[in-house]
Image (cartoon, rainbow over all chains, first blue to last red; front, side):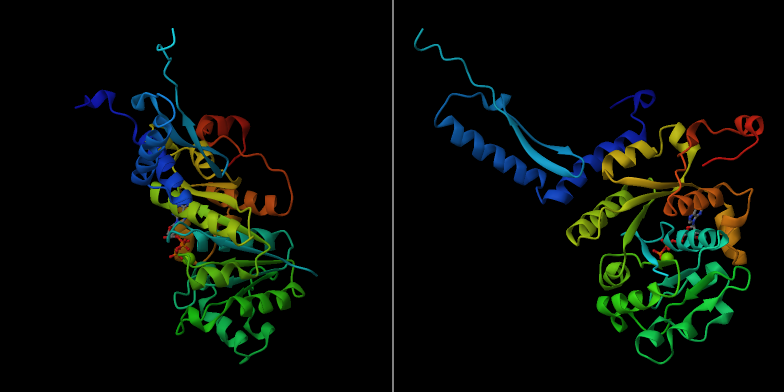
Length: 82
Length: 264
Ligand SMILES: Nc1ncnc2c1ncn2[C@@H]1O[C@H](COP(=O)(O)OP(=O)(O)OP(=O)(O)O)[C@@H](O)[C@H]1O
Ligand SMILES: [Mg+2]
């Protein structure tokens, strides 16, 4: 439990929650669809190159009223040929 | 005369559309502009009482559209402000009595009659909303600094873009500075960042709005009313004047006494 005196102001909760809700309203991408997409992407990429699934970051960025899907996928350093 | 047609809509109900239409219309008329406002909320007529014109209604919007009267017969002229006219909504009909193409036809006819047509949209995104925006040259979306109103405003802004009625401009109504200051209400910048559209007005929460609607005399003409001044500023921006948005958060009584003027 967060102590009362450190509780976030309600306006910032409102803003954060709205940021997420609006992205999903505008794009029809619910958090669960986004998760499924992320799993598929990790599986596909892993067939070709070694990645650490826990490092993969996929999110929707927005600029004004338009949204972009942004994926940051760090590649694992290969040690085999050293 | 070639009037511009402005519609005020919101998605969510009760955010202050009718109040805004009445006050912006009054402000424009007080500046010598000939204004016709249309109550687009068929079945839930309200603009008449907010303007104090409820006892003068003979014909309504549906009568004009169905040809039971001429356009001018349905335009109620305000005796206090001769440039102000109202076409009331029908009370005993529903939204299906009017179509978007009826509204476009009416809008074209009205363009020759006045300088500004201001349409009060019903809440929602259904037929009544479609009717209200059909003839609009410019749409103003109204919201309150509150989650559901902002979310619904975003939906409407998206629909307007898809319909090539955008970009809409935003009015934020019922801003409570005390709550913003203590972090319990979305600030203007937050709402603007979320909706990413142009701002045209900030109206503070003001008890005077209710007093004015009790009396049927919109407060835009009361020089002491802060909400009234905010609506006047919107009207002036519509007329193309550059009126800065004053920082409501730093607006305190001392400052007001010191500078001797009111700002919003
Ligand atoms: N700035 C304000 N300060 C205080 N009260 C306000 C303000 N603006 C509007 N109100 C009040 O909020 C209520 C709803 O306003 P109004 O009828 O204008 O909203 P609306 O968007 O037209 O509603 P509807 O969607 O039902 O048509 C009214 O009681 C009105 O007096
Ligand atoms: Mg209304």
